[in-house]
Structure formats: C-alpha cells, structure tokens
Length: 340
Length: 284
Image (cartoon, rainbow over all chains, first blue to last red; front, side, top):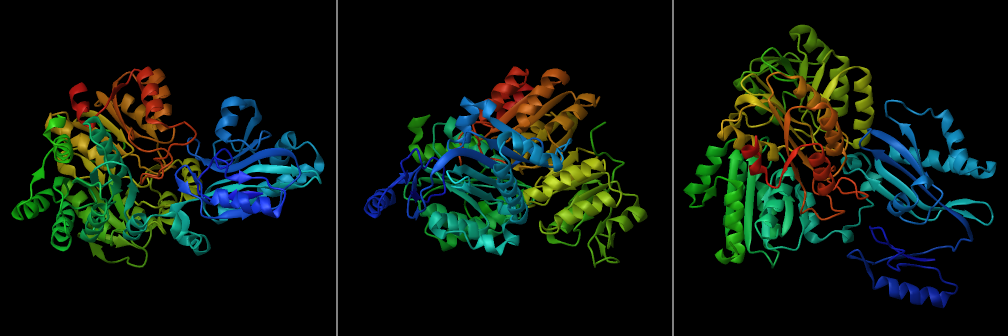
C-alpha cells in the first residue's frame, strides 16, 4: 500500500491511497500521490506499508462527547468508510459505549460483554478488547480528543490490525506532553500561522480583503458574519485573546500586512480582561514600526476605553463607536462607496 | 431578584495575588461585590486590596463564610484549584481561566456534580447581576439593572450586546458567560430553567456559536419548559468548515452543530433568531 500523509480525511476518495503489486507500481503510485493535494493540503510524504489480506473491516473510535461530557467508544462493523457516511447510510451498524463520565456510567466489566456483540469470536474479542484498552490508555495518557482506527482490519490469518488511524490531541494539554509537542511538523503550517501561534494569537487565513483583528472568538466570528452581510469578505480570522499585550497587536498587524490582497485593517476590541489602552499602544507601536499602506478602522469599547480612545485620537486616528459602522467603513474602504 | 449571585453573595478569589486576579478583584470590589478574601497557596497572611489572603480555600471559607469562588489561577493549576474549592465548602465556582485540558474538565464535571457544586466556565467572563454583584472580568459600566436574562458562550460578543441593550434602557437581571470550551460546567438548559423561575427576568437573550449541541438542547428545553420570550443570535455563519476558530468548541463536526441547524432548532422552539447582534435590542 502507498498512502499519502496529510492532516485531513478523505484520502482514499481522493485517490491518495493505492494498492500496488510491485516495486515499480509503488514508485509510480508514490510519484502521482506526491503531486496531489487533498482538501487543499499538499501531499509531501507517503507511507509505504504492508498490503493486508483483508477479511473484514471495522471502525473503532474513542472520543469526548460534549453533550454528555463523557468519553465514548464507537464501534462499527462497517469500517473503511467515513463515519459520517456510515451514520447516514447504516445507522444500525454504529454502536456506542460510555467508557467514562456520564450520569449512568456503563461498568467496565460489561465492556467485554458489549464488545462480544461486534466481535463474536473469542480470539477476535480478546484482540479487540486489548486494542480498546490501549486506545483508552493512550487517550488518557496523552490528552487526546479523538483516537480513530479506520479501518481496523481482520486479516486472513485472524489478526486484528489498525490499518489506519487518526489522533487529535488537545491543544490545552500539549504543554504537559513534550513527546507529543515535538511531533508538530512546522511544514503543516504557514509561516503566518507559526508566527501567530508563537505570539499567542489564533489566526486563520481566509480569501477576502478585509483584515480582522478582534478579541474573542465569538466577537470575531460575529464580525466576519457581519462583513459578509455587508457585502465584504474577511481576509482572515484573528483573535488576539485576553490580557492582550501591545506586542500581540504589533505581531497581528505584521502578519496581516504580508497579505497582498489586504485592502483595509479592521480592529474591533471589546475590553474585558483585555485593556483598550494596551490595544491602543499596540496600534501606535505598529504604526511607528511597520510600513502600513492600508487604512485602519478601529472600534474600541470596554475596560480602559477612554484611555485607549484618547491615545489614538491624540495621534490623529479615528475610533468608531458602533461595530456596524466600523464594518461599513471597512467595506467602503475596501471596495469603494459604490458597494452600498 | 436575579440568578446565581446577588448583593448577599460572599466571594473569594483564587489566584488573587496574580496580575489578572488582583486587577479584577479591585474592579469587583469597586462594583460592590462582597469579595471577602483570596487564596494563593504559600502567600497566606498577606493582604491584597485590603483583603486577607489565605493558603487554602477551606481556611478562607471558615474565616469569611464565602459561598462563591472566582478562579484566576493559571491553567496548569486550575483543575486542582477547582477541586479544592469544591472540597473546601464553595457552592458556586466561576472559572475564568482558559486553557484547561478537556479531559480534566470531563472528570471535574462529574466530580462536581456528585458533590452538588455548580461551576460556570471555564474560559468564561463570569457572572454579573447588574447593580448587585459581579464575579468575573466583564466591563461592568456597560450593564444596567433590569429584566433581561443573558446566557452566552462568548465573552466579548456578549459585552457588545449588553452595551446595545443598556443604551436602549433594557437592563439585565443576570448575565452569564458559560464559556467557549468543548466541555463546560453549566450549559444553557440549567440557566434557562433558572431564568424561567426568576420573577425579575422578563425575557432571555441566548448567544450561541457554531459547534457542539448546546443550542439544540436549549431549543428542546425552551419548547417544553420556557414561557418567557427568548431572542437568539448564533455566530459562525462565515466560519470555514474543519477550521478551528479559537474556541476549541467552534468546530463543525459530522454535520452537527452548524449555525443553520442551531437556528432552525431554535426557530422551531419559538425563539426569535436574528442575523446581526445589534438587532437583538429591537426585538425585546
């Protein structure tokens, strides 16, 4: 098997996983796959692995279920396909078991009993139970939010093998797992994303022209929604987070200004733990240190608002009062008044 | 009346000696909150904002009679701080700290439930009953006392809406930021029930966002058990699928938790759903 290695799903459907019979076939398959992109992710690595003689394919996952705040095991005998497709087409093939949390917790003793319905043969059952226990241990030990084995295959020799897996680690837990943190591959991130991450900013690049600097994910998303409603397009999502230092604003500005599509920067801050004067200081710092060639629209409100506002107006900058007005100003700057 | 906190609530601050802890303790005191002390292990005996600092929550509760604790300690120590508050006799924990690992919250949620201790958050702005008490980090001057109950997954977006409401003289009974993490202590449903039973709350504003199933659960509860008017805004229409937008919660997964699904569920429950947050004030 030759498998493209990218951090996204749907590789099989995209043709990035191929079964090959010879070295030559493997080479040509690898060449093709290495030029592909799956869901916008360029394939830069392939994994060449044993081709299994598959008798059956299962799906096994352990994840955190938000609604019940519990850790659940999901098993399906219809492995190999996307769990979303199984859920849609063969809902009766999906079984779930609560491993931890939940108000009425299923007992651990009953797990083997429960598994035996999906793995009726004793030899299979023992292997499955061991795999599930290991998955759970891994989830607990390394702060994972999802461990998904798909497919979990049964070979002709009667072995259960994890033929492919996806693991999602909790960003909030990464600090206590140096062995996981070092697995982060900088190639998977753009230079902008890496710089943002280092500065403690959350940054996602988008396709529009209006650069956004906002505090709080909810306000940032609502503002992006508002920009779209007003006929504009956000260039990015950028959350400066709480306790924002002036330095963070400077880095945010620097990242936004690298975008050649950028026509205007829209700063929207509602101070809680963030102080408006810190933000204002950051904006002024950015104006002194960076070459800013686009208009900056600013909306400040909240903690130390008056101080921030006067710092900016003393420097000749205009601070808007309403978000809706700020959005309209930004759309006008980016696309001209004719848009209205 | 109001829900969760009022002028009688005695509050301690865990992490009172830190930058954010001391800054917001001062702000809470200024607002009139009965902050009666703080806790920082190893710094007992000092004073911050003229308040006594204790080494343990238990000691602080014994000395001050506090019922509520605001947690400002760093994420690495926050799970222990939450546990200590629950074991130390606190009945309402407001956890401001963000960055707590999800699995820690899974365990804490069930532990606190068994102990009958309520937790708001983590990763939230806290609670304010305007004119009476604030336990959190929200800018208080934007609030006015009144009859609107607010529940929100966001921090800053809530301030935005509150500002609009107060400007139109629509005061608030209590505003709660429930937090943006995937696993939170108190969800929409418990708070909707409290607001429904609160005589001073006339209408409820519910601010949700993409990801999770909290809004869908709220919708089914509203349908059967809420008689008061509910107005809602859900953010994340423009969020690209499969991208994390800051809140770990703001992820679309498996077709569930989309803005459209949430809006539909809420509308079917009789909730007024708006396109823009600044429309909320005109519909109350």
